[in-house]
Structure formats: C-alpha cells, structure tokens
Image (spheres, one colour):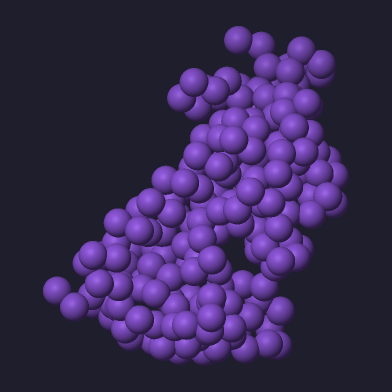
Length: 206
C-alpha cells in the first residue's frame, strides 16, 4: 500500500503517516490528538471556542481524543473541565463534534470520574469527594510548578452506591452518542485516584 507521503514525495515510508485500522475505523495516519485538560469549559459547559480548537487539529481520517469529560457533578476535580451529564452540556458538544466530522475526523469522548482527586469546593453542596477509600491524598504541586492542589478527605462509597456510579457512566455514554455520534468512548475511572487502584495497598482495604 502506498502511503500519502510516498505518493507525494517518493521517499521512504514514514510509519507515523501510514494508515492504521482501529476496530471499524480506518485511520489515514497514526498521529493522534491526545486528551489535554484545557480547563476552559466554564461552568463545566464546553465553550464555542472549542469548535476552533478541535477543528484546527482535525485531519481527514485522523483520530482525536477529547479532553477528560465528567460523567456527573461528583466527577469533577479540576476547574472548568467539561461534563456530559446535562442537556446543556450535550448541546454544547454538538457543534464541536460536527466541526470535527465535517473535516473527516474521528472523535472519541474520554469520560471519567476523578474520585478522591478532588476537594469539597468541586463537589455538590460541598460534600466530600467519593472514592473506593477514605484515605486522603497528600497535597501536590500543580503542573504550573507554583500552585498547590489540596484534596479533601474522601468518603468511601457503600456497596449499594456503586450502581449509581455505573449508571452515571452509562448515561454519559448515551449523551456522548447523542452529542453527535462520537465514534467511541474511552472510559477512565479514578475512584481511588490511581490508574491501578484495585492493586494499590494505599487505597484498598481488602
């Protein structure tokens, strides 16, 4: 198969620019827009300027992964990150998705819950963040190297509360599809604040 860069320049094949089949999707190249926490979705609602941001980074047959998108009002842990649990949020995503699809892009929605990586200021009614543990995180220096992120002691979920979190992800997935048939969904759950939380002695009580 002749790649675009070979057809145009006759040079050697560049792996990053070669096609790739991802499930049912035929990517024209392997350069992917990684999810970037932009913190510009005021009130957790995607803003019109995101249309330009994502469309500028779209190529025909290219894959984009949206910034982490909260599944509920308890899923938040960073300022001004988008959500997809309300009608207003879904409607705000639609023109963004349309702009990506109009240029032939493939758009994934990354839905998540931050778990204990939060504090009461981000939680509804100032409640404690929810997690699989009640062990708090230590404060961390933010990415700007200056500000300090403080985390409130979390509340460990009861077993009977877990189905509600599962349902939050289910509804967010449906909303992502309603927002414009976002091609696939990347699920990320950080209820303990770590990627491999089921194996972490610091968070598990098993």
